Image (tube, rainbow over all chains, first blue to last red; front, side):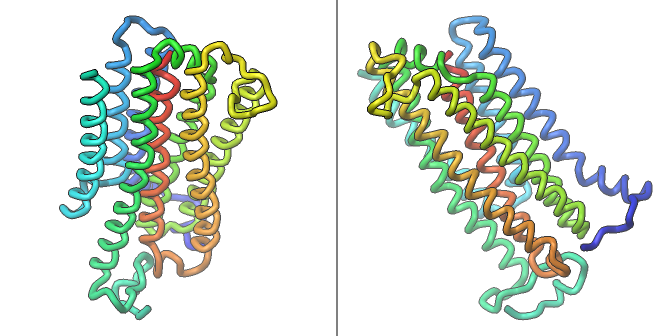
Length: 103
Length: 221
């Protein structure tokens, strides 16, 4: 197996950090958002807290799709596919809840 | 398969003859994976929507059932999957650099974290069994038998989490095979994009759990 050298020198370490900076920051952001949700779930500070929890989940999902799955750097057709998938989910939820919430 | 000038460097891919260029092949692979992931997204979305409807129809029963879920194990498992997404992202970046040994190490770490998730999930199921929280077992008393509507939520919990676990188990199996192939000499010269395409699947498994944890464990507490 190929590696640059048995031990990384300063140049390699700088290159490695430049490549891993985004994944590490993404990980820390997701961890912080998870901590918010776990804290809210454990303490239940107010009645409508589920709205905040679902907003935090939406933010986490957006970070994973756009950054971790690199949709923001993809070609327009892939971006369209990814967007359409969540659009179908929105239709599924919207039309079903229109029924249940209007009963 | 045919040779391609783009595969001459330390990192690249071999062009299949039905593609005109490497770029076209790479784009088709990514698009194909996304098309499949969207069908999976709609599958899980149906389950999450069902959980939401159950909450609207039977709020007390769902809260009673959700109170028996192992909130802290679910939270710990979310951290485990977030760590696995980090190691997967690192493997992708290392594959782009052509640093094969470190990339293989990250792939092994990813598979190990996936296995740790399944171990914790298995323990959670065992604790549920001990608490008589498996209403589908006909010969075993059910702890919330006086609230029949709780069965709906508890059964949905098992269907959703077991389906996710099957996806994760499949993902680990594929990852073990991919890691073995990725450790062979010349892998990154011929198939670097396999790592990127597989990474989409792993991140998607992570995404599904990140949605499942609050929908099942958190908002119903």
